[in-house]
Every structure is written in C-alpha cells, then in structure tokens.
Length: 457
Image: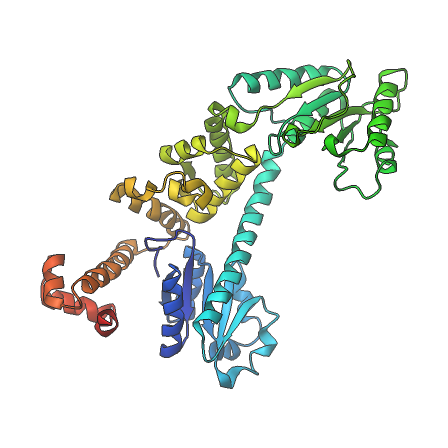
C-alpha cells in the first residue's frame, strides 16, 4: 500500500489476485501511463487500501471474483466514490464472469491481454471516475455556493458598484437589465435581488429562449400565474426574436402601471456576442454591468478564499489550501468563462490532490501551461509535503498505523530502480552512488523484488 509516486497526482491503481504474467502485462501499461500501482495479497488489506488511499482503478482476477460469488463487486464499491473495477479474465473463465457484468464492473480484460485493450479500458474508466467524483463534489458544493443570500464577492470598483446596485434593486420593483459575460454571476445576482425575507417566500421563474421549444407563447406562459411580488428572469435576451422582444416590452410596461398581477422582470444580456439587447429605449430599465473576471483581477484572490473556505466545510471535511504560487497562476489566467470556470479549476485541484495543498501542477494543463516550470521551482520538501498531506489526513481519519515504513519503502523502490538504470544494472556502482553497502543493496533488491534483467534490457 502506498501514496502516489512522483508524476500524475490523479491516478492510482491496485492489482489483486492476478497471475504473474497477467500482472506483468497490466503493470507495464499502468506504469507507461504514469499510474501509481501496487499489489494487495489478501481481502482485508485490499479493503483497507480502497478506503485509505481511494485508488482510481482495481484490477482483479476473474477466478477470485467468481469464487466470491454475487455481491462481491458491489461490496467493494461501497464507500469508494468512483472506483473503476476492471476484471482480468482467462480463457477458461469467460463464461463464468457473465453473471457479474451487471455488478458495476467498468470493463473486462480478456486473454491474451493486449496492451492497447488495457490502455483503452483505463482511459474509459478514468473519464467515468473523474466525472463521477467531480459531479458529487460539485453537487454538494454548489448547494452552498448557490445560496441566494450570498452577495457579489470582490473589492474592485465594479464589485463594489454591483453590490450597491443589488441593495438598491431589492428596495424597488422596476425592471432590471444585468449585462455580463457567461459565468460572471448574473443568475446569482438575480436570486439575490429576488429574495426579500420581509416579504416571505415568493416565486421565481427563468425563461431561456435557447432552451425553450415553444418560442413566443412560451414567454407568456412563464408569466401566467406569477404575482407582482414574484420574478421572471429572461436569460440570453440577445437570442429573443423581434416578436418576443416586443411582447416582453409590452409586459414590462404593463407591470409599471396599475396592474398587480405581473411580476418583476430581470433581463440577462451577454455583451460578448456583440448583439444588442433590444431594450435601449426603456428609461425605466435599471442597469447592472458586471465586468469579466480578467478585468477585475484583484477579486480573484477573494473569490479563491471564499470557495476554498466553502470547500473546507462541504467536501468531506478535507482541508483545502490554494498555495501562493497556485494563486499567482490563477491571477495570471485570462478566464474566458469567468467565475464558473474558476470554481471548476479549484474543484479540479481538489480532485487531483485528494485534498490538501494545491500547487500549480495540480491544475488542468490549460492553466498550468502558463508556468511550465512550476514543478522545478518547488523545493523537494514542499513537493513531499504536497504529496503526503492528503495521505496522512486519510490515514489519521481511518486510524491507520505504520506510515513511516510505507513512505520509506515507496521512496526507496523508485530511487534504487533509477540508479540501477543509470548504472546499467551495476550493483557495486549503484551501492556507491546511494552510499550504502552492496550487501544492503542486494537485500533491498531481493525484498522489493526488483528485477535486474528487466532494468538491463
């Protein structure tokens, strides 16, 4: 059992009850894809490993699955968010594995274990796992972030002005035009304006012409049944046709008159499309303009702190810390999808680290590519801290003991392999470079089952 090796911080795999030649085939593919892999010998250790280290993949022999009978796969799935189980089947077991194919098995590798087939299953299962994990985290997190009582975050002049406009709009009931690029928080602001606790629970409906099959008449139907204390939000008004704009203008004017049956109107416009919103002549339309995130970079740090604190509360109790180098990288990025994209990038960092400190290399490639030397700039101590922090937290939560020998063994194995490769398998030279006795080196090679012939080749 072990924490991840240096390389991709996202992927881990366990192999369980595979024959030696099968294990070798799987190992070659996993290591080639920079996936940290280790082997478990008994079921008790496997269950502990699945809970403590949350691997992405489990490769298990079909003989063992069939022997354990129905329910075995589903029992392994419990409490292992997104675990992809891949069964490795021999020719003699192909028929026997069929009853298990509905037991949440991600895939079956059939003899003769072609590397491309294994790699394809890993790629497919990886995409499924990432979507599943991120989906669960996002669902839990957004329940908090989407709280309509939260107000617009930031210290830039634009953020201050937006907050003032929200407070003024809550006191009035006239129509409002919110202008901003996708992901800037137009819907969030609409909810903040709509909710006024002193008036009790009132209704809000959202009409989006892009998603609405019944154009024109659909807009009218959205208004029907809403009272004057309710709100209708019309998104993407640049996609309304002339008839819809005319109808909406007419309804807004009616709501400004004596009618008590029409709701308040909040209109969303995306200026990046370069299409006018069609309401230029309405003097009563109050305007709220949200600048894109790239034009208010001073707000990024505050937003990161807010989402970071929220995640610390709502993501399995894990401590999340966006390090200063990572924060600097976020501030430099141009954010085409604004705050929505920022949330996604932070969530990606959480998933890729398993919790703990987030460094530049934990972000997606399109973010981290801005600083291609992020890994080299990190000290060795900080690198180990970034890798060990989530592991120690999980081991502590599950009352796991014996971290010291586990970490040392996982560090020693790649170190010995690297030096052996550098010396062409010369054990005497390797021992000198490592600064240990040759007999000690031979003992470690034997204990760790490092194959010198493979290294020589």
